[in-house]
Image (cartoon, rainbow, N blue to C red; front, side):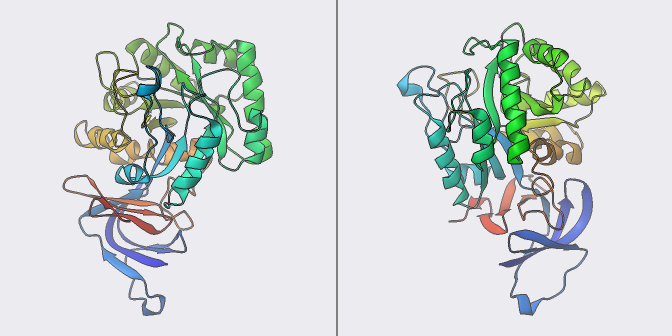
Length: 375
């Protein structure tokens, strides 16, 4: 019930120096230079010398029931196991369907999210898939958002992709109405997570919608924006207008631009990394597209590490793209994405020397120890 982490080097994600952290009843109860003996609490004390403490990662795009399927039944990917998320340092996940809304369905997605929560993780889902009208649980996006606690938005709705329904501006406007209204009534983020394909229009369907309506730009989260250079050039301009952008980790091919390079480019362009998020697209079709295996959720931490260690980007800024920024986008902050008194005790510890995940708490419960899942 009570746990003290001693001598951590704390990034919350802002750098706070060397601290002790007390967790109690699933929350962060105290952060101090030194927490003395508390025998009455019978707290479990762990010396974390040599380790960096940071918020548990927030991954807003994982195919928790399995993605793929575009090459026929044999290409369907198996549902993800909780240990895979734990080993990647992920404590909060948002499940998506993707292309297949027949072999996979919303009811299964909801139940899988609930199953992951029994492992100690926090899980939400988007209602819908690539198509328009989106598949739902109750028959309506708005009602899903209002009545089903796990539904946090709609997605991943496809645009500029040969697998999309090529939604018209009117289609997108009607969907945006359902999402923003459902979010307001249900007390949810009410975001639309947009799958952007490699079609020639890129972000144009979204930018034209924003130019012709009064929907807030903050409710749209386009993803896969590093899939080619033309799209990423559009993305840099879109971000400068105030848009939130989501990059896909683990993708570095002839076409795709790796996340570390994208983050460096955004910094060089003067954009900064506010409103920039990174997600794994984990358990979906792997690098190279459908039929190329499953993408790994571990790519989220791997790209974070590479951006800091190999590309020398500031740890605090890069850490925000996988913690604070997605938590803010999903309106989960500061409960998630932050190490502060009152926040959920979701804490990832990595060794300073090798910068690899070593220990993970989710809601104060120990899920990883010495780089291995705790059962």
